[in-house]
Image 1 (tube, rainbow, N blue to C red):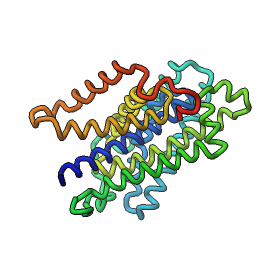
Image 2 (tube, rainbow, N blue to C red):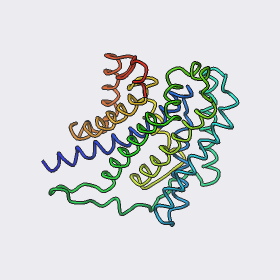
Image 3 (cartoon, rainbow, N blue to C red):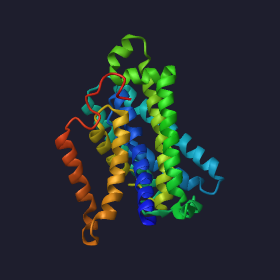
Length: 294
């Protein structure tokens, strides 16, 4: 029973982290119609910022990482995407790839290509006793932080004027602009919120792995895109739920598969994802009505 509870906590923790990945990317995709592959590079930059600030008090480190990634996200929007507002999606996709490659190569040029160890948040790698069950502090923090982030985002989207404008833009951007919504302001807000989520994800991911490298953001952005497809294109709730589902399935397969088959866990995981898409090609939350997409 103890091992089962620990496995459940591990699954919820990893699912929470993946939900953050999917949520941050889906927000920009739903609002600006930009498949932002530079999102993974933003997470990578956040990890390197954490490495540079690691000797400072942890609140300063976390705040510095989040603010740095938000600034980077706004700069990416202003420099790479704003001049291409009226371009077709293929052009925007190529632009996001170009920004991602640029940031990755800048990281290699400045910090080198070798993997670095990060000594930050080591105390979170310990565990606490909850009802006789030993649970990692980092898992509890990941779950709590993700829940708080998603709750805050939900309240923001539903209770504030800018949040309502973001939801309107996600539903019908052209109509939202005709009704007076400032396109640049709304898209910049989406990139800023995405930057906050990417910064938090960078902190959690780096503490979890204890290492960083220029390709750190590759896995998060791939998981985020898979979550968007499985959850339903344009659905923020769907991307978040799908990210959570992917994380839970990953841990479940690691536990349930025989030892000889565990190296092939990802093959089984993506096979399950293919089955889901075959049964529901529009995604788990695809095809919903206005107001249900975010």
